[in-house]
Image (cartoon, rainbow, N blue to C red):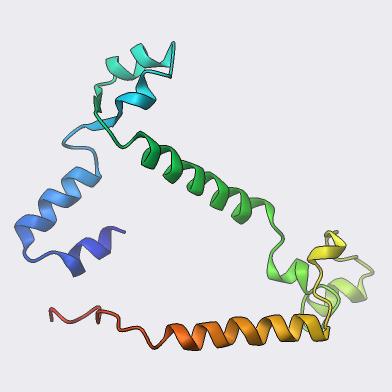
Length: 143
C-alpha cells in the first residue's frame, strides 16, 4: 500500500505527509461510538494517546469485520494443492511414491469435474468479460 502512495500522489510533499500519517506520526483515533463500548480497555487506549472522533463507527466495524473474515478465509481455507489433491500435478510425485496421503480436506472442497462446475466457471468467465466493458482509469496516466 505504501507504493500506491507514490503512484497516486501529485508531488513528493504530499507523499511525505501521507506516509507519515500511515505510520502513525499524526496520531491515531477510533470512532467515539466504538471507544465508548470498550469498557476497561478505554483508559489503556487513552493513555497510549489514541484519540476519538465523531461518526464513522459503522464503517469502522464493517471494515474490521471484512478484514477478520478475509483473514479467516486466508488462514483456514485449504489451498489449491489441497483442493486439487486427487489430480496431477497437484502434489509432488515423491509424496505419493512414499505412501504419504495428501492433507485431509472436506469432501466439498475437493474439486470434482462436473457439468455444473463447468457451467459455473463459464458463467463467472462471462461476467468477467462483461466487466471489461466498463472504463477504468489507467494506472500510469500521470507519467
